[in-house]
Image 1 (cartoon, rainbow, N blue to C red):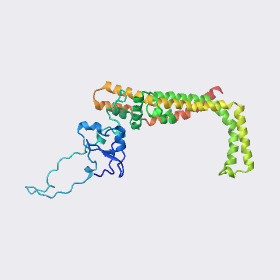
Image 2: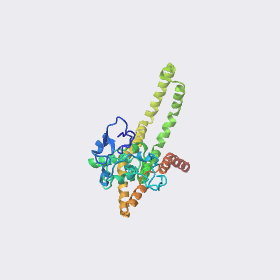
Image 3: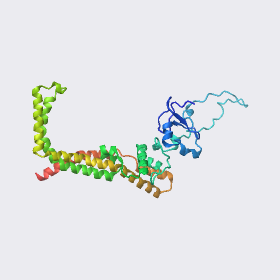
Length: 321
C-alpha cells in the first residue's frame, strides 16, 4: 500500500515517498521509523487493547459508485433505503485529546502524581515540549530546569500561563528595580545626550566607516573619550553593573523556576478536579478550564510595567515639589 501523504500519528507530519516507514504488525498503523524507535513501540500501542485497527482516513472521502442492479422486486438500489454508515471512522486523531498530538508517550503514563493525558489537557499549548521535559525531570530526579520563554518574556510569561501570583511578584520586582535605577539612568542619559546627538549628526549620512573623513574620525574619538570621562567621573560603572543585574538576575531566576511553578500548579488543579468529582468528563473539563493560557493578562501586565514607574515618579515629583 502507498502511504504517501498519510499522517504519522507520532509526529503529525505527512509520510513522504522515500521516508523510512514501518507498519505496526498489530494494528497496521504506518509511522516514521524514528517515531517508532523513539518510544520503542507503536505510537498507537495504547489503543491495542481496544482492538483498534488503523484505517485510511481518506477512504471515507471516496464517493461510492452508483449501483444500477435491480432486486427481485424490480426496485433499483437507488429506490432502496440507504444503510446507515458511521459519520466518522474511529481513528487516533478523534479518540485522544487534541492536545495529545505530537506527544510520544502513552496517555496513561505517570509523570509523577499526574497522567500524561491530564498534563496535556492542562498545559494545552506546546504540551509535547513540556511533557517531554517533565518526563526527563522525573527520570533524573531534578526539580528545576531552564525555560527560554520565561527568560526572555518574564514577568509576562507567568501571566500567559495563568501563574498570576508568581507573575505579580516578578512584575513588582521589575517595577521596583526600575524606580531604584531611575535616578542613575536619568542622570546618565542627560549627561550623555549631547554626545549622542553629536555622534548621530556625524554618522547620519554615512554608509560605512570608510566614508568618514579624517576630521570626522577625530571627532568620534573625542566623543568616545568624553563619554568615558562621564562614566568614570560619576562612577557610572556601578550603574552599568547594577543595570545588568537588574535585567539579568530576575530573568535567570524566572527561567529556572518557570517549569517547576507550572508543574506545581498543574498538580494542584488535577488533584482538586479529582477531589471534586469522579466523573471523568467533569474532571477533564475542570482541568482544561483551569489550565491553558491567557492572552489578556500578559497585555495588562505589559501596560503596567511600561507606565506604572513613570506614573509613580510623577506623583512623587508633585508631592515633593
